[in-house]
Image (cartoon, rainbow, N blue to C red; front, top):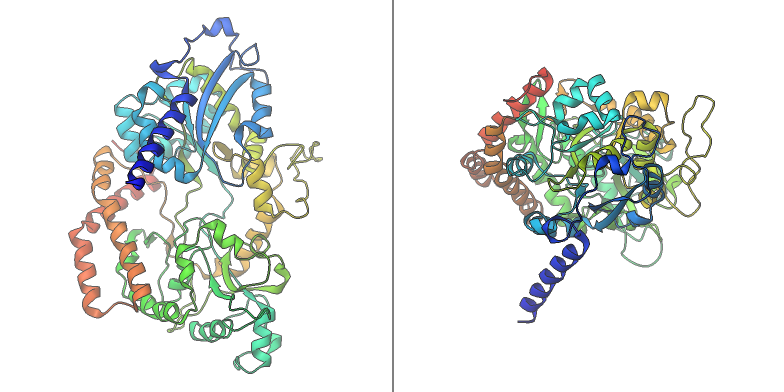
Length: 557
């Protein structure tokens, strides 16, 4: 009974919070003043959008990282308000709160906000809501968005990727081209711990002079080392060492996919990759089955601790703080994870039982198409679209993604007119500094932007350099990432029926097998048959069509 009451009270409080916040829709949104009365202009992108500070206010709901400042207090957003004279009232939600409340927000029409930032609606959701006239089409307001209009004219590929089957653009995109998103993992090992194992004779296949960046290990050798790392390597008398750590199934970085690639196929966390031009379901490969059975033994022995399967990025990063506990881990750089990165070396990708040494490519896109939406009853939407258009200015985009001038960037541009980042404050990691000060989201950081407007952060340069050494040489030449497919309305509707069931089944079976000792031949055949029954074949046929349209530059109809 107490649980039921708690749920009811929680729903009531959430609804009340949203209603109080909104001040929008039929429930209390103030009538719009005429654009002429407000002194609205959009042509001069360096001048205020309206004459009087705060004469037009908007309510925006946004997801926010737990480490970020309240968006209402974030300098880059306050600077935008001052330069545009447009007043934004931000309501910040955690990712979990947004997921729980999204349907409530969308169904409570009387209390719609003016916009949702970090919206991340799926194509199917965007089709559904656009059909219901829930949102305003960005493409209908491009006249008032000189920055985005110029980008789409210069980059027809971006326009193509973000246009929906009805020919309209319904959400504001993000472009961040750095060459990083396809490569989510670098592999690190504690060199001091490894040297201890060499000294005490646990590891006989290496000498101390071998312990350096670019070390090659096969899976069996790595297993011996991880077994040794279960001992009291940090000398604190506790069994708190984590032999191997990562964020299980994390799509962005630091996941387990490269462990599977050692068994001879280009793995990623969503089991679809383009091989020789064909979108391929790697979750039915026999090599995947072999990898599962091999690593299930690691789970049973504690080389991959059970805690790995519950890791969030926050819990993973916390594991590297304080007393040294990590033996081996996947991430982009050691500096973000551990307090003494000098104690860790870069490993090459692990070599599999048959001598395979490869990595796959993540499908994380560099062009994302649903970062913000504007609701249909937003007053004077021209003003809000013009406000968002300022985010696409290269210097503003840099601050949206990394943080404000004067805090993250130097006040003065360098001799080439480019932004220069300040040193990271002592006691903070680069991630912490960035997350605290940057809302991220709607932005345009293309290769041209990096070449002409801002210097790439030192951490990104380091990542690119290390990927070039320890990852890129191991990507098969016939493999491409699958991202930004272009679907027809019928295909979107078919995916909405089948896709989630397919991936829920794959994910459920994988975790069951890893924790349960592996998969038998009979179970494997049943699994593949079940995927057929769930229409996995049709799902991948749709992927193929969407991929071919994307690379061919043709529009879905």
